[in-house]
Image 1 (cartoon, rainbow, N blue to C red):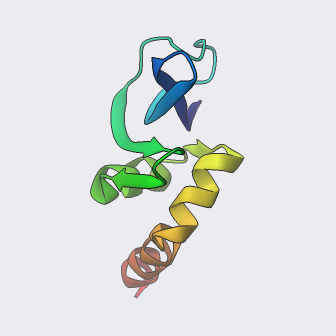
Image 2: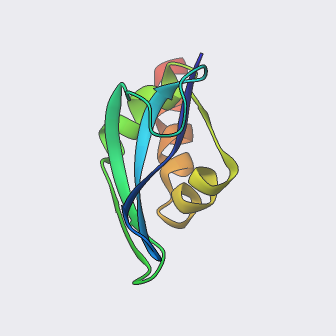
Length: 89
């Protein structure tokens, strides 16, 4: 199973995070399948590769709570819903 979760980077007291698609059994800093975004909580900056994020969500990847909150701010789930409704019609 694949999860979309945060991978810690940066130095001590200045954490930044990569949003990655990673196997559930891997550790937090383990090998990721693909980098799909970046999040800096100190500067409150977010960068997402939306097509890659949508690809993994369509394949059944489960986002963690924090990644889900970040994605909601960018309306990724609305795009996912629109894409799924297009496929059904």
